[in-house]
Image (cartoon, rainbow, N blue to C red; front, side, top):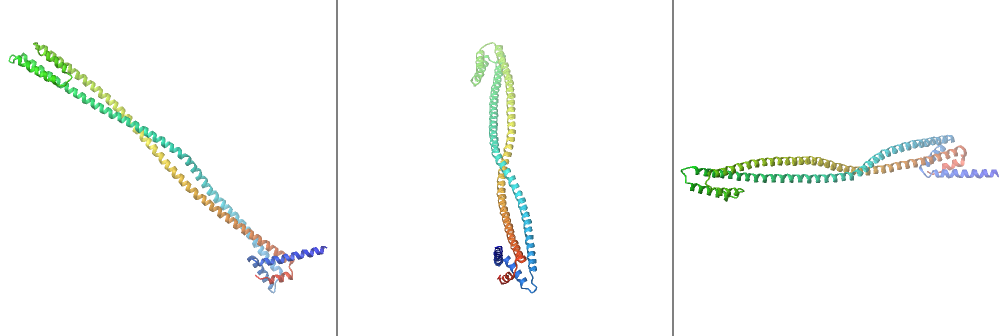
Length: 352
């Protein structure tokens, strides 16, 4: 019974050997092995050891190829990991900077809006001060004109009074008719009364006094009037001087406020310009970082595909070499333990 089992097993193994040899002739590597076997078996000094030696040499080469494939695969994986780390570092840095810029952008916009509002407020304040300064200048100019007009009237009236005094003084002359002098004085005073001046009340008083025979009394009245008017002129000049000093103080204060505001406006404009420049830089940086991320993400995807293709190529090659090594090992097993004339004849008859 054991003998029958052994015979069956031997037949099965032999059938598998024939099948293996037949399959070898179906692809290039197998054809190379078959051709090597056929050449060795057909030579006059052919021997099994030579074929086994050649197969073991092929076995060694296949194992060496596997080891080289392993080293190349390890090197390729290290290169891919290194490149991935470099690309990912750039992506992480660009993403962080882009996120930071995008977070800062609306804050800078709000700062610029607030700064522009400050500018608008300061411009409004400066315009109000300029308006006040213009109104102050106009009011002062009007005051000056009114004062000068009043002074002119006063000077003219004093001159008229002095002329009246000169006419009255003629009454002391023996060579002039009193009636003529009084008539002349009356006409002169009437001419003063007809002028639109604030001194008409004084003129009326003089007209009434002109009929008095006491010349010294009239002269005294005129002198007192002249003295009073000149005193009023002096007081008026003092008041005008005070007004001018007050005007200059107010003008200096407005000009100082305006100058201070202009300095503030210059600073605010400079700050606003910096914010606008910063916003532009942030916008450009966000766009450039976005473009860089697109490029690097595409580069990462390309590298991933390249590395995946390289890995697949190494795996396919490794699978191929393992398959070849398995075939070589089977052939070595055939020639070292199961080789016979039937297998020899079968090999020599295979077509490749």
